[in-house]
Every structure is written in structure tokens, then in C-alpha cells.
Image (tube, rainbow, N blue to C red):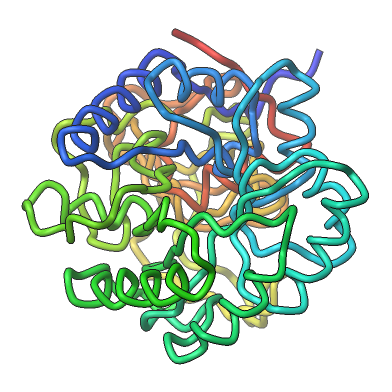
Length: 357
């Protein structure tokens, strides 16, 4: 049986994080959709989010949504990534809400929903500065005209994405721009503005500080619930668990070696030219995990005195000279992960997933 490397998920800590986030947001009349994409739509994680009070599950991949539904998770489900034309039949069949930004896609989704005989709510994404997906605010009238002619696609509100591509932080100012755009579209369509979806984890700080515009009534939260962190604002969220997810790997070699390479140095296997400080002979350890399994830059060893040197596809090399207890072959070491490392590990077919409580 293949055991390592493994991604260890504490399901109770995730559920507790969800409860705390939901409680904070509900006190401000904001509903929370739990974002499951960080753990590849794991059904048990989705269930924990729902049991923690999230009103629905949001994921960027239709494949994950279909898998969760087949695993018995009732949802409702929101598609986070603006949909591809090639998957609109699946959106019409399985998604309850989808984020969307193109007029052409709305018209094609209307046809797919009509064929399926099923309505789908849409949240129009508005670009308020991060320069990823979304209409410009001055496109509100055009998008409203298209939505007004739909029968099966139902305008539900507007949303923004912040802190993902350009690192633009949510503020009362840019979210107020979102609200005003939503009101314009709602007036065009003649529907109430059901949702103002004000982003994700990076928007929680506005709720904490009491400066979230009152019209914002929905957040899509993944990182805070899963990791207890807010990478955009470079903080650990103090009221949440930040140790619900770990990566474990097995040691396959331990020996003393020079800390500086011997011989002429060229590029490594990934085209980078590495640089090493000469620290003399040091005790090194190699773990059976690499870049094919995880994002190296997102790992932090939990064992004191252990330092990551570098990694190839399959081997992670570490300096273990300062560890109190010397490592040996067969030992298992634990790492804290950031969002990117968690995402990569949950996606790799070489990493086993173990649920604990």
C-alpha cells in the first residue's frame, strides 16, 4: 500500500473554522459559501463546511462539482471560474449558481439551461481593479440588456475577485463600486439585487474592522476555513486554526555532505541556476517528495532545526544539522503548507490524503 507522501486534513478543525467565519459574517448579514477548490473538491471537506454553517459550496472546476454531487453532497453549488463554452451543458445540469462575465456566454448558457429544463442563477463579475475576470462598470447596461431577455438564466447579483492576480486588496471604496454597478444591472433587468458577492478571505478584514459596505451580503471563503490564513494581507487569522492541513513525507537518505556543490554548476532540472552558501560539511536529509507533488516554496518544516535546501521532481533536500534528534531513514517529517502547496498536493495523484479528526 502506498502511504507517503500524504496530505493530512483535520476535518474537525476545518468545521470549527467554518463555524467561526460564518458566525462573524452572519453578525454582519453576510452569508458564506465554502470554497472547496483548495482541496480539489474533497467531499468530506465540503460536508464539513456545510456542517459548519456555509450556505453552499463553491468550486472552480465542474469536475469537482460533479464528483461531490455523485458522492452525495447536496450543495447548493456555485461554479467559481467563469465557465467555458465546452462545459455549459454541465453547468446547466449541475450548478445552481455560476459566476459569469461575457454576454456571449450568458446567451449560450440560456440555451443550455432551456435544453436541460433547469434554471441557473448568475453572478455578474465586475472588475474593480485586480484585472482578472469581470466587466467594466460602464458595461452594466449592455450586460443588463442580455440578461433581461433570458428566461432560464436568472440574474442574482454581482461579484468581484480581488487579491488573486494583481494582489489588489478589497477596500470599502472598490466594493462600493461593485455595489453601484450591481444596482445599475438590477435596474436594467428588473430583478432585485439578491447577492453582492464581495470576494473571499481577503475581504474578511473589512468585516472584522466594521468597514464592509452594508450592501455586501456574500463572501466566498476557502483559505481562511482551510488554513486560517490570509495570504493577501500576510497574516494568520487569530481566531482560526492555522494547523488543519499538513504534508508528511518519509526520509530516504541521511548523511553528512558539503553544503556547496563540487564541480562546474549549470542549470538544475527546472532551468534555474542554483546558488548555495558554503557552510562547510553539514548533516543532510532527503525526503521522498518533490516538485511533482507539492509547491516547494509553500512548505515550512514543523521540526525545529530543519531547513529546506531545494528540491527536484521527486527529492526534497534539507539541512538537518541543527536538529536536536538526528533524523534516520524511515522517519516521517511534517510540514505546514500555504495555499499553493496545499492546492498542488491535493491535485497530485502521488500524494495520499488522510482525514483525521
